[in-house]
Structures are given as C-alpha cells and as structure tokens.
Image 1: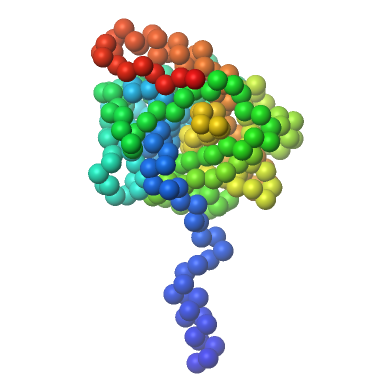
Image 2 (image 1 turned 45 degrees about the vertical axis):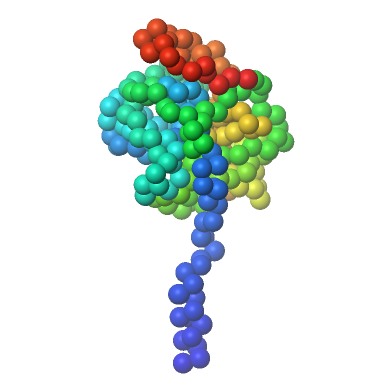
Length: 254
C-alpha cells in the first residue's frame, strides 16, 4: 500500500519532465497571426492592415484559409479575434528554391487595429550574432515532441553566427544569404510551428524556415532573414496598392 501511494501521486500530478510551460502572456504579441483551414495550420506576422508575412512551408489557399488575428488560445473564442479570409498568396520567386523561403498573404478585408491586433515593423537593420530575440508560435517547444496548437508559445533565442549555423546543417540543406540562425545548446531553440515569428528589438527579423533545433536541441533553428527582403516585400505591397481601398492607414515601418 505504501508503494502504491507515490505511484498514484505521480499519476495525479501528470507532471512529466517533457511538460511545456512556455505559454506567452495572452495578447502580448498582437502581430501574431494564426493561419488555418484548407489543410494549413501555421503562423505569420501582420505587417500592414492588408498583409501578412510567413514562410514558404506555410501554403495558405485563397478563400480556403482563414487568418485569425488577435488570437491566443486557438481552441476557444475569446472575443478578441478577427477571422479574415485569405485573398491572395504571393510566393517569393523562384518558388521552392532552396535559397528563399518567404510568402506574403493578402487579407480579403483590412485588419482593424486595436490593443489585440497591431502590425510589427519591418527591419531597419539585420540581426547581429549574440543578439537576444523572441520567437512565438503555436505548437511544442520540446524537441521531438508533437503538440497540437492551443495557446501561443514564446521562447527566447540568441542569434548565432553564420558559420556556426552552416556547421550544423544536415547534408540536404544549402546555406543561403537569406538565412539567419538562432538558438544554441542550453537555450530554447525549438518551436514546432511553421512560420513562427522572430522579433528582435521590436522589429520583425525572421519567420521559421528549418526547425533544426526541434530535431537536435544542440542545433540552432533557421529563419528567413527578413532584412534582406524589405525591397521585395514593399514592391509587392506597392503593386497591389492601386486595387485596394484608398482609405488604408499608413504601413508600419522604421
């Protein structure tokens, strides 16, 4: 009987070493977007009332995928959400190139900015090795463990130098100047959610590309280096400006 009690206590506690506590403060990342529907479940970043940036791993479909803004717990309606259909999807060319992983998503109607929904500025500089950045997305932060999306997760990661990143690449990956790596041994470097958003010094610096840190916790995770894509992003928005309503608010830039 005495042996049985500790076993029962452990079962009731349900606290395994793999339990994941890295939940964001609710609505602390008002630019975070949950893209779902049409076979898609991934993250993105709101950069303008019409536009979202995500990685090529996330493949939303026009009018089949919904962009949910103001989300925290995706399994419950909290009264803060704006659910907007995706109108257009623009992939960086050449599509499926190992050198690029970037996609822009246009909303079918503009986002309404409030305390729960705000855009994140595009980068005015590139991230530097050793800089501390913050990654958010829905999914597990524990390597090699799947978790269905529920509440938004947040991790803190250091940017690592390019050579360190290249040294950890699997043979099937190719280095690109459009990549930046973050996370290292004994730090949080896994968030198992396509398009997870990396913010450094209040600016959008990355969307998740390869989750190396989720398969080997000693390896950094790869993000699209968004400071290299400012011109492309702005050119896409400018091309569509003439077909969008003229009462749009100014885009958030630094």
